View 1 (spheres, rainbow, N blue to C red):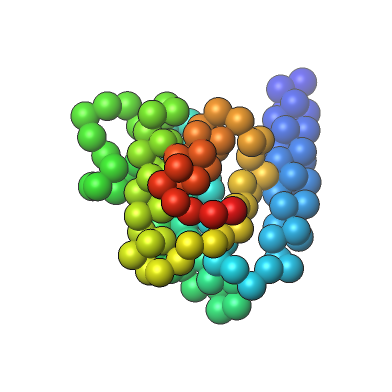
View 2 (tube, rainbow, N blue to C red):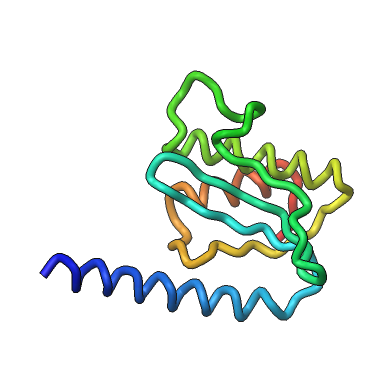
Length: 122
């Protein structure tokens, strides 16, 4: 019983991921890719033409990691602000947000909102 529930969750996640990747593949702007685990959240700036990573920030980064917890909304907001600062450093102001199959609420939404507040446009 447990395996079928896990398989169904994985199947739905892969379907959402494929749908968002297909929509993002049509752009020439840098892409913000987000990955969320139970303990951390990661965000990368990726060049869509070459596929090269332009930079990345996570709750494991020294600039973001503090004394607090890393798997909560406040940590995601710090990652979003740090990502926007990294993008400005690279002279990037407009990006495409790829939630990578994760639902747009909670920590993923907090990261996106913090990046928007810090000046990133998507």
